[in-house]
Length: 431
Image (cartoon, rainbow, N blue to C red; front, top):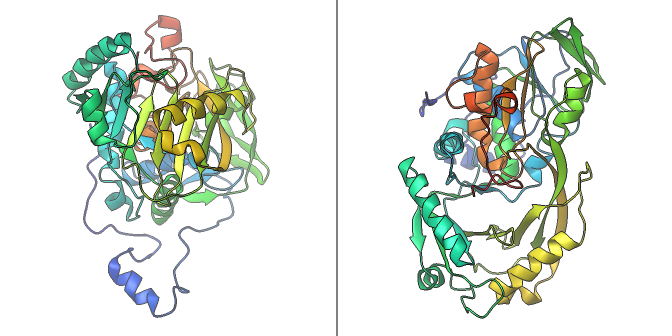
């Protein structure tokens, strides 16, 4: 059912020129002072055919695919702050699809295939880099589990290669494979098609493309209530007035349970801080992404030279965009042991995002008991990698009021039927 975009010229309702080497050269003559705004700043209309709440990557992707694939252009994206100011701008940008369960593999591989052509589709450089994602095993148990996982991944047609310690050392020269360390490198598996992308560029690219197709993107517009008429949605209350609409898609990550409560719904969601940090920039030393499930540490190097390190979620529920000291301390200890050259680096920035996790650590892409109200949430720490696939299938759900084959397993009904997609609790990492 994959989306097959036209890679050629795309009609732009707003009349915007395409970005290209020629437009870059043309604007150089005016010292780049004449670039057109990437998207408009419209006032909200009184009524829309659909409203998307949340101006992060998933929400903007949903709006774009609703317009590009389903022809729904009288829609609005409402964001209480600025675009990409939530989890989209607060993650470690890892992209992969090497998941164990068939349902997980389907949606993340769907997303990865969209990632591979996204810059062309959006006419925007999202800095997608397929530098590979290497997951390390630190014990015999992890090696045996890894063998099971690699076979399952390959059965789903997804690339995955097993590497031994010496092969890992050749692939990542700065890693320490001494077997006497606390977390010895016993082996690993590599998805070469995985990698990273520029998170804010993804939000900007989707915003520009959606705006080109007529979508109203409204920033600084907080939703304060969901108005119901019996068992149907009637519209949204905002800080900029009431907006009438028969369809509302909620894509607000860590605050999804708050939004659901406005409609009288309780979701099986827990929101927790997720921390990350970057070091001062250094010369290139790491050209791949390294993940360690045992210590919940993942590391890559940005194009600016910063070492980007991420950790697991904190142990308590919170809506604060910050975290506690023990989590990064544990992450840094493991990171320095595996990569001794990091020991003298200074931390440049540290932050937290708010991740929402379900009991089975898989997302919710579903209708609700309120007609016209849909939720896309519960991605945990795996949300960024799913951005294109999530937006694509959620747009299809809203447009047709029924899930397609990829989205169907992620219905809210699974918490009643017991058909859970049992991924590892914190990050949706298959176990």
